[in-house]
Each structure stands twice: as C-alpha cells, then as structure tokens.
Image (cartoon, rainbow, N blue to C red; front, side, top):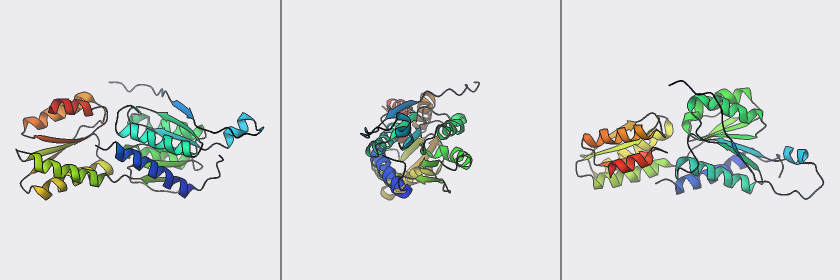
Length: 258
C-alpha cells in the first residue's frame, strides 16, 4: 500500500467507517503533556526486497486523538474502531492517544504531524479550534474533525447523523414521561451536541406538546462526579426521563437514574 491514494476517496471511505461504527454505538494545576500513544501496525508484507525504511515511507499512516478511552463502549470506542477498520482496509498504520484534554489538543495533533502521519483525526467537535491552528502549520498533513464544523485546504469535518438518533430518543422520552419534564445531558457545547439536543427537543414535542425539555452541559464528557451531579439536580426538579451524550460519565448518570 502506498501513499498515492485519492484523498476524496479516502475521506469518503473513512467517513463511512466512522459513521458505521458510531451508529452501532449510538444508543488544580494543569498536568504536563505526556501522552501515552498506542500504535497498531496494520500493513501487509509487500513481498519484495525493499528495506523497512522504504516500506515505512510507502505506508499510509493514520492517527486519532480521542477525548476518552477506547473501552468506553460509546463515542471513543466507536471512533477508534472506525479508524482501525479504515486502516486495515488500506493496509495502513494506525496510532491513537486516549484521554486528550483540551489544553493538550494542539500539541497532540502537532506531534502526530511532526511524526509524518498522513491523516490526523480529532474525534469530536471540541477539536475544531486545535485542528484549524495546527493545520496551518503542517500543510502536508490532512486533518479530519469528527462531528465538527470546519473546512479548509488541508482539513475538513465528517459528521454523523445524530439528529435522527436524538429525534427518536425525544419521541420515546415524550411518550414515557409522567411528569412532562425530560432532560438531555451532554458534556460540551458545539455543533454536534447542540444539534442532538435540538433534535431531542423536537422529537419529544412532536408527541407531547406539554413536555418541558431541559438541556444540561456538564463541561466534561468523562467527569463521573459532574455527570452524577447533573442527573441528581435534574431529578430533583421533576425530570423523570434523561437522555445523555456522555463518555466515561455515562454509567454514573444511568446508575443515578435507577
């Protein structure tokens, strides 16, 4: 597999891989930057006498920065699996870094680019600003933001159709509620999370015109304490159905609701 690959075709392929994986999963002092990347070599044996260095230079290399862990059973795992599937099909090399906090996004993406990765993925709309900043510094690297809202010479966004998922969840919530008060909890506010919240509201009101929809942003997809606190606060105000878009904090919300 060589790096001579049609960019539009590749973006289309990885978009399909990400979308499939995502939809299957749908339902103090700042610490010093010290990522612990995990690398997956997914190349086939070329069957010739080329040196390892030559083979490496011809391998299409993909990197993904994740805001959580790949075992969360949701957003991060689906992103990891989508990129992994694309890399396997392309006989490429993949590397990933988990738990990338917002202050570390720029350095993480820059590090991938400096190491020669051809495609760098920021998994979440919260990576938009970092991608735009870093892309200008590394014109030979292509950057992809998942569920973002950016486009440029060497960067773009791919979005999943969470609007439909959110709308259907809203329909269910609107039919289930006995207090006529339902809620949507998520981490950060950006295009993807806002659209899903709006879809949830529209879905709920399509079947229950009396329902009140509350939207809560915890500020962190992974903070368990914040997720639990948000759920408790909503329940105390009469909310009896909660829909969430969280990562590591999701189990805390579910346990609180029970």
